[in-house]
Length: 166
Image: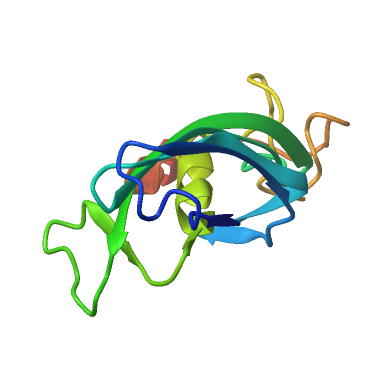
């Protein structure tokens, strides 16, 4: 996701609007894979603030992943915001990490777009709030059918008391 800033590079206070729609590869976060369904869309503006470029905009995507309880596919429509400052790197890094370095006349906003979308994904992706998950014994999806497994759960620390009862 590239934005050409050549028109405003030497014009402090000027701004340009942009709209980018591009396919992005899937990403893995904490062991869970998220695939982007269709194009990721970003629209906003770039403002030249004395050779630092403020990028502000809205991000939107449809993300596909697996339910953490039953492993069925789930699609989420997510929207985020991007609000970043880019500055000429000149071989230097910003010690505070607030300014993103770039070279040339283009800004690559893809990493920040991905971050803005990932921030909007819930910590626990489930297919529905009342998802029953998988049976711990046989592995069948309890949302589809009920299994015949015995579901008595005993705390292993108290299992010895069960033996005394018998």
